[in-house]
Image (cartoon, rainbow, N blue to C red; front, side):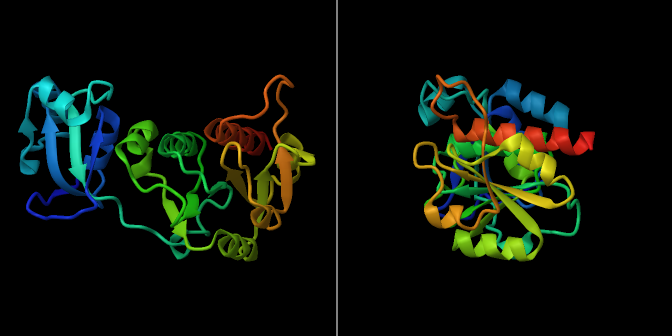
Length: 255
């Protein structure tokens, strides 16, 4: 279980909130915790679900305290955790030997924390190996990202790289086939996935509206599209990623 470091100071601290994110963070031994604030009901629930939390010195507060802390629109459920972000990982940390059939997701300038949180949740649901994004032009950990991920941020590695195209080239050297999602991609996603069932794959996803940068497209082995109703111009990047991961999971398990 994560340790308490209440006396430490860091400008990088942030507040995580909600039952599932807070519970998952407390169970992550890599986390450095500063403050755990709970309603009495929340404290009882945590103690019942994960055991004693006395060593974390939880602060028991009334609901009004959380409203003052987060505002009235935040769904905190009586759980709040002040903590440091997880230590950043580089591409060298990606274990390419275990579970070679698991896809990875590469994000090209996807900046919305809630989109990344939703992608993390889908990544865990459909056995994705890791999320790769850039150190710049991508959000760090936030409460909104953690809440949307519903705890998946603790279990799916987020790997940050300085240069995305260089990282893509290294992945290709390691045997990955990279599938870029593009509205005008000449290949249909399902067809590409049928053709790549026996190789390691990575989905390359661009921000909604901007899409993939030209330099990133050039590093992809396939540019694929998802067939959708003509009345819809595009899909949100988190939804498109979910479709990609689910389709890969279904097709590979069928094979």
